[in-house]
Image (cartoon, rainbow, N blue to C red; front, side, top):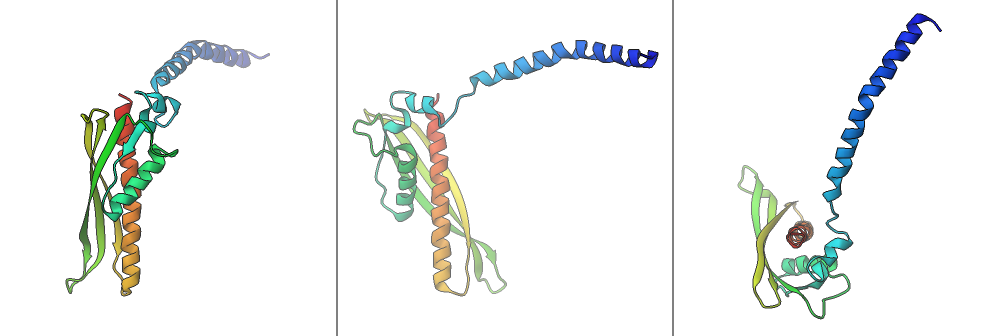
Length: 179
């Protein structure tokens, strides 16, 4: 072996001797830091505080968009049906607002934002409100010459916003129950 090869080998050996402990320390810190992470939708989430999300009864809602939000929440929170003895009761109200977004020179709106706002509360068996919050979702649709196409686009935007709103409510409730 020539002298430059030995020199390179010694430098590489010194480099790895110095960096291996540092790399091991960084890797162990990363692994230890991840130990406190728990899945939000995992099996532990359903066991938290009694029945967890599976023990939430969802109160009926009057309007169509609220009914869509409620159905998405039922599918997400209680896919096996309403619980016989719920730990919590979820009450919510949904408001819908249509705001013109794109207005032509002749004051004719050709695009709208459809905003859904939900106020909800989670009460325990005794009726004491444990958690109260609001959530919001926005969809948009175009106004076209065909009235049927416009109505269909508005309905589709409302349904998509209702789906997003239900996911937002679900996330907020799960985060509350994880406390």
